Length: 97
Image (cartoon, rainbow, N blue to C red; front, side):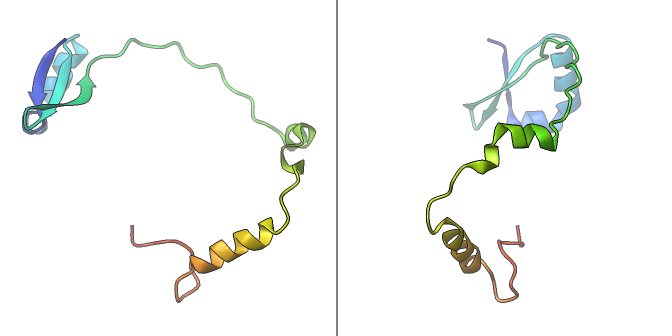
């Protein structure tokens, strides 16, 4: 299973716990004695991912992804949703977050 470590101890001794995890030891993080489901352990290394080639516009056009018909009134409904989300200055969304 591995050793349990409380969140406070993890904050205070993070570098020691990380070093121990790099050495093969696993830690289960708890908050007030309850298991959080978070495990700190060294993961096996994975081989480098092969370089992916980007998708071109011609690939998208060939796939007809954007050629799907939309229901009647779809664009108007989307514009109405956006308009309802605007604040007094005309911005969309909550920018305070």
